[in-house]
Length: 329
Ligand SMILES: Nc1ncnc2c1ncn2[C@@H]1O[C@H](COP(=O)(O)OP(=O)(O)OP(=O)(O)O)[C@@H](O)[C@H]1O
Ligand SMILES: [Mg+2]
Ligand SMILES: [Zn+2]
Image (cartoon, rainbow, N blue to C red; front, side, top):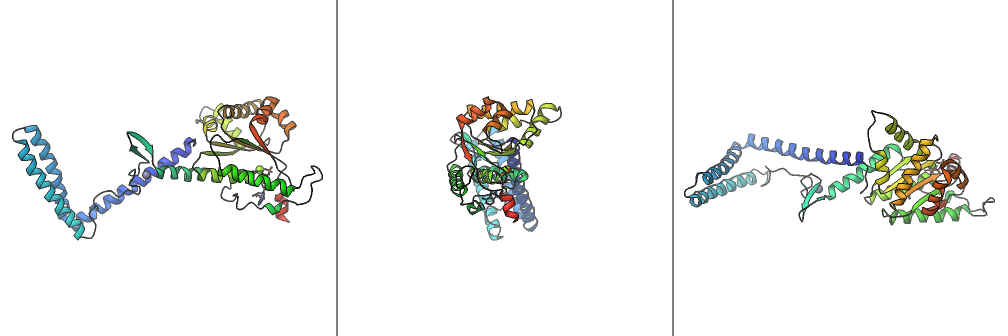
């Protein structure tokens, strides 16, 4: 699945809280029933003592079969009386059992299937929700969707510098990104979004993230400055622990936004290369967005890095006028 460990922890915690809530609710109901119908408690105690008596009978030996048959009959009669009491009282037959919100896994997140432990759909849904939450903490995920992307923001006049019409170029990119998200697999190709500021690179990469997360994949979206400051902290400090680099290498889709805007050092350049290279070798996709052109990328991150990108990533060249400025007009 490729989720970060913090997403996993959060989802597991939420499932655990759900289980606790179900159990607390059952306990409260049990006490309420006992208070209103003391006979229910007696019956439960008698049923329990039948079990103890059965164990003792087996240990003692003698006419075990006859004894056990008697105990079994007694047990069934007690059960029947208890069930009837619960039905008559209006609580329902299963009122003394814990009602889990997911009966498939009893709110544990996992269940046994053909001798294997498998992840329940409720845990998968929780992982998606936790991943969205985590992403939303750093980026306006809910605002940047394909639906809120307006293609009319791009000019239909030929761009004199490139000889291309921004509207048609951006229509192609928009459709490409939509189909990329819809057909995403952890073996999808990488993307390099290039272009000047305010042209929708972050918007479209978040729209992809949104859809890919909804489809159940593990997505990490991070801006290059945030990524490097986290890696630096982890690498150079003794107190900070974590496996950011490992998560960045293993998630299904890694989105590095604003490459080039980070403070560049030998450390940052080598880290970016290592992460990108490790993912490319495993055929795992990365989406990079940057204001840099190829020459600037090469200057900043070595030609080794650029030749890797050239070989592995689909290049999307964003065109148009700064939408941040257009929005204000
Ligand atoms: N086609 C669009 N339709 C609607 N809103 C858009 C569109 N493109 C961009 N925006 C909005 O305009 C603002 C700037 O866009 P965005 O942040 O995606 O630009 P960018 O290319 O990432 O710029 P930078 O290079 O500075 O990071 C954002 O609020 C974004 O949601
Ligand atoms: Mg951006
Ligand atoms: Zn479940």
